[in-house]
Image (tube, rainbow, N blue to C red; front, side, top):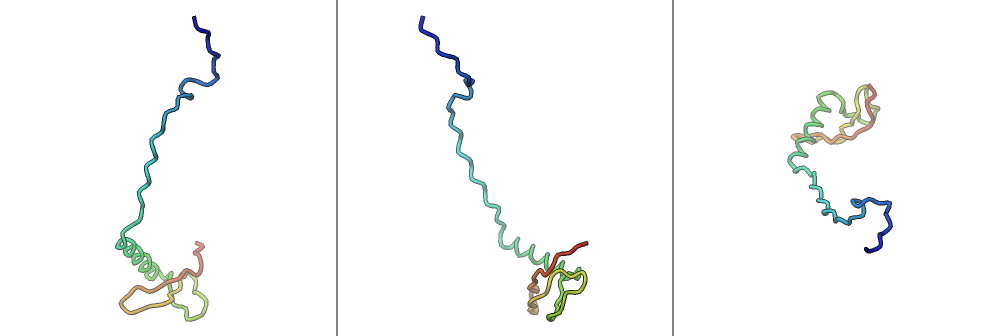
Length: 88
């Protein structure tokens, strides 16, 4: 009879060396350019409609306004810049 080996403190399942399958790369969550433009358009249109984006002409923002209209070209959406946060 062969001599017995010393008992290991590790279980048999933890000592087996199984190779893990390689992790799959995550798919990019980039949106198509048309979806981004549509979202930007909806955001800016909503700001203007709610009165949160206003042209200031160098003065302070009126109450309730959070964005300043920096540039506006006829036929295009205005270019807005956040100036402060809303504190309801």
